[in-house]
Length: 105
Image (tube, rainbow, N blue to C red; front, side, top):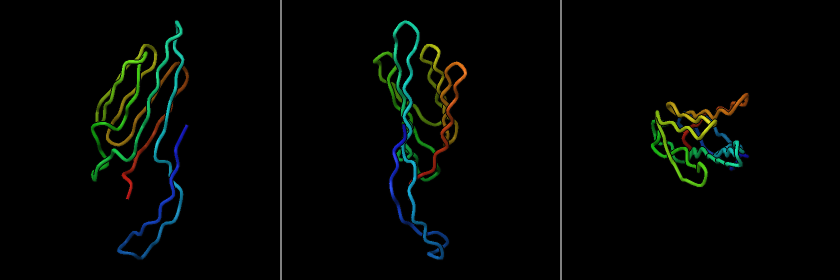
């Protein structure tokens, strides 16, 4: 799932006005073997001015909470999650989801 939000902002000292809808959150849910579950969310609002952050990805692994950010990672049984500079990957079996973030204006 994703969350979208509307935004209007200017670029290039006001020469360009951007009016659009942007994805601000991405949410992953996984059913793991032996009836286990995991969930993870990527929050672009947690990215700072350098497009990095320390708590950008938050979630649960079998009801145990976790959070990580820049260069962090988490393995929840077969679900692998990792974050680089401002992007995160979520991999489970043949599935792979990549989220590339940008700080909100």
